[in-house]
Image (tube, rainbow, N blue to C red):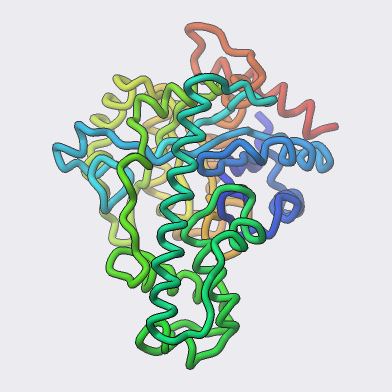
Length: 367
């Protein structure tokens, strides 16, 4: 079996991204030998047309994905931390292999538009609170939400965009950072990514002067998110956190067999990992187990922070994936590609899909 490198989870400026644009992301993928690439923006399919066109120009195979933050009320009531380590019940879900051209219509399209609008509204409220803080400390400037939306985003507005706008406005002025933060900046002012992360942490997160709690309306029930993904032609996919920096797991994920059983019961038979979070040993153990349990398994890097890192995947303790992990990722991507191409049938196993999907991918990347 020929194995090519895959990155099945990449955010772009259509939500928030380390990349300046789609072309940069795909230029990096091509130069690093990554031949299958999945766009995976929050609440948005707006980038699919550009992703498709730019992948074709580089003979890369495009996967069309999406990401949501959902809420499982049963887990919330039980205090179960799922894949958000700080908020019980809050559950990230991805959709893999959505139809392109986009087919989402009706009630599901309305729900997606509403949750995207609610997310943007929460950031607008945060911007207003940030401006009140800037006025209170005598900063002498404010942040225009409309300008942020117009110049720094492609429709989906995240709190990271506010941090970026603030960093641009301050322009390295150490005295101004101290005035705004109430204490000196800890980061190197020349390190844009570090500065933006610090501004977000100290001003926009819980306890910060500009923090605004998210409205419950911003989180659709998990079942509704699954229906939206399926209506859009995709595969509901659970993103595993895996081990954190201390080697710990969330309540939901620490018993892998139990987690797999619950996911199957909920109609989820696809899983993914953001590989830089995990050690090679844990990633091999979890991914192999899930694949053996009949799950489609894929890996990605996200790139949804300001720091620009390689597109070719690595783990937390190695600068590349092991051969075993590359093979798992390739098989998973091939299975998603088969689904995306409409080649799946009732009763198919992931291995059946992978065999068909490999042919589809190879026709593109060998073009």
